[in-house]
Image (cartoon, rainbow, N blue to C red; front, top):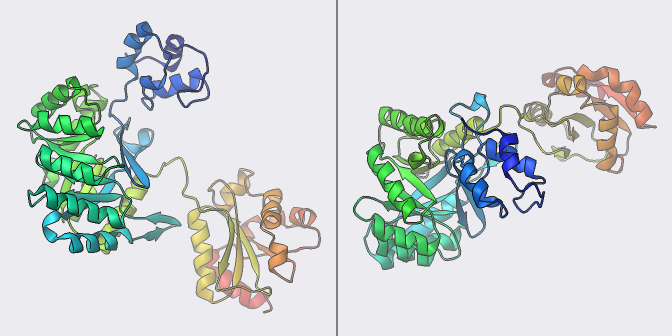
Length: 442
């Protein structure tokens, strides 16, 4: 049976030195019990305790990090099969495949186009996580030039699709100063690829369509001193992907089968449905072949929804938002920072054509009524937001419109904001336009 947090704590040095990154040994022990930390983070654990703790504390799926020149992505370290059991921690990375046979200029053009893609989803900026550069030519010089071309326009993490150690070394030389994933070792080249990965301190992907062979290769590479591994089970159909990736996740989590406890990389090509399935179950890195903003947006939104903590609502940044270029005569409205509430209000104000100042109060991501009931959207918080953001300096009037659902706060707000007139707005965002037309004088 796995050890509890308290059982692990008893085996730790209990010095609270914080060198592991956690404030106390107990906090670190709880993270070890939840499989969200690694024992090697503690520099003072004794050899005797280490032997007892290593098996119990190792995450069922190893955490792998890829780093670009400016930014990184982490995958793995998941602890549940289904999000509602707890949550998913590390969303899969979406990468675009680029091939060295396209030539340096075309590779650079494609990379720059994809690098510049940004999509706004309820206040969250979405985009690609990196690029997978393929040594399709088999020429180390051409591959190196392609990697350099991508590096010249992007600082995102890389995957080096190299079939031989010589190609991998050329790509690694071009990507110096970063931490790419090398893809891929197989039963024929794993020793040479292992040497290249060890020299570069880079993670290595292993490719085989046999789970038994994958397990054998990971064991051999672990014995060779490689810990950061990624699995490529070669899935190319909906059924095969669902069955294989679910089997790998279950073996790692339910059976504690360490040899397959690593993140998974997949190559759905241009099959958007297959990519969507792999986002849900259970890829760690997904490489698509074509940059299509419409299809990419669908995958990014799906990923965002699946990998949002179900216990934490999506929030927007508290602050003052300008809608339709407001001036000093524009009305001031207030709402909470729950994303759906914010966008409902902002879209209605924008659609009505009214210029307005929208004060978004920090209500810990709750809607208006929920936040009010929880004491997170009260007169004190609203008044603090008005004062903090200097609303009085932005307008020549002193009128504040609050949601109709919390009309009860008007009296308390007048006490918190002496001199301000508190106006009770509509209960529903859809009525904001007609309310302003009837109640506000331009």
